Image 1 (cartoon, rainbow, N blue to C red):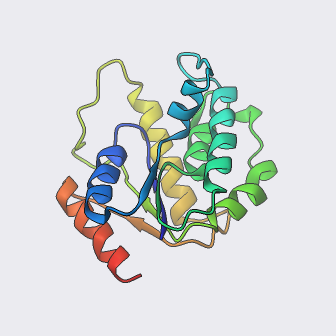
Image 2: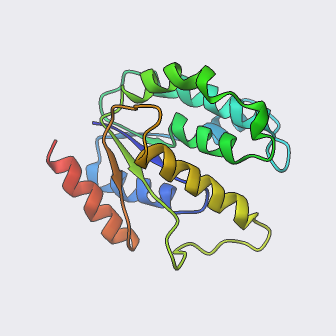
Amino acid sequence: MRIAFSGSHRCGKTSLIAAVSDELGSYDVVDEPYHQLEEDGHEFSHPPSLEDFVAQLECSLELIGDNAAEVLFDRCPVDFLGYLLAHDDADGFELDAWRERVRAAVQTLDLIVFVPIEEPDRIKVPRSEDLDFRADVDAKLKWLYDDDPLCLGVEVLTVDGKRRERLAQVLARVSRG
């Protein structure tokens, strides 16, 4: 299966991917676009600009385009749509211009595992984080997955609970094929 893990920052995606990878063994793990771009010399502004998120969206589209059969992606293009739509400069982003490319890339996936922010928050978030932005990204992702305005055409599994509970939910879905 080709599985992408999606969610706002500091929600437990990466630790869940590590746990799933440990259990599945044969799956490749593709690091999130931020780290890939950083390794390639991209300098992100702080906080990230609209252009930084567009660069990550482009990178995510390229990474998802790989034809590997057993892979776990840390993030997918929909994540960056959530960030772009929640950004202070969101008026400068045209969702419709990306709709077809994102839909085509996402449809190469077998499953998206959405890791929402939970109440109470399961992850200790540093005080330096913009909690309102994080929550807005989470809300945009919930809208993109629940209302599906892009007609993504891929199954989305929303997980909850502690890491071992989230892991069990993903493994139960993967075992069904």
